Length: 187
Image 1 (cartoon, helix red, strand yellow):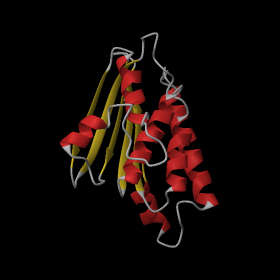
Image 2 (cartoon, helix red, strand yellow; image 1 turned 90 degrees about the vertical axis):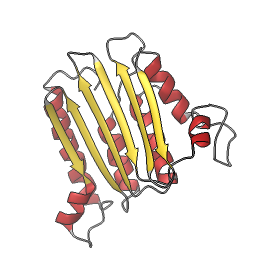
Image 3 (spheres, one colour; image 1 turned 90 degrees about the horizontal axis):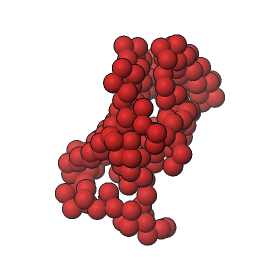
Image 4 (cartoon, one colour; image 1 turned 180 degrees about the horizontal axis):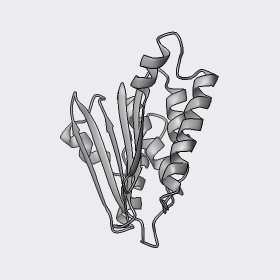
């Protein structure tokens, strides 16, 4: 995939398919260390050790519409091509964690892409799920937690309503601009 945000979307879709009710996405960048860490945690059904090994192969998929699964293997390849590292851990009945570490000064570093729009799309298309999105560049950080939004909005206002989607978009853009002022290299 040309942008890492698309890899994030693919991995999160796996979390949704696994029945996760809470998905945490963290994209943390250290410009000094030339590193970008992307971590996705979920509280889905998790995987057995055998499944955990298989999911990293491009020739395995649990989908019935196709015989190959490229999301996790492409994400792994993208970070390893930069000299970074990849790990995936899972416990059946508890959830899964995917962590990718990228070396941002490597020639093969793919752009992060529009991670804010990716997160917005995930939230608005899955309004019954909870997402915690954290983005940081060096010492500047922000978090968007849909559980807090639900508490403020009440039960009658869905996260997919147009006014809420517009507010989330504006909030993410404002916070991303704060990060950009710090010289984020992957945005």
